[in-house]
Length: 64
Image (cartoon, rainbow, N blue to C red):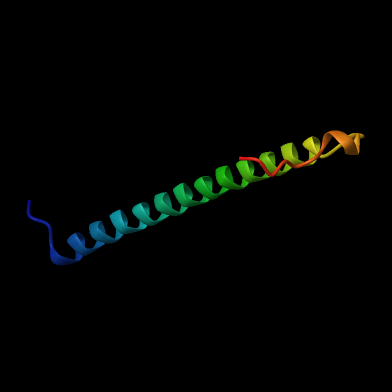
């Protein structure tokens, strides 16, 4: 049984809609993963800067 023109267009729209939803979901999860990694890096930087430091031990040397 051959499909009519309207059925073919409908099937095309179904594939496009499903593909659009999937690509949106994939992009959203990818951005959330990046955001989570950035937040963890900021947390590690904040934790590394906490504490009491002796100023004499934190000198920069110019020798390479």
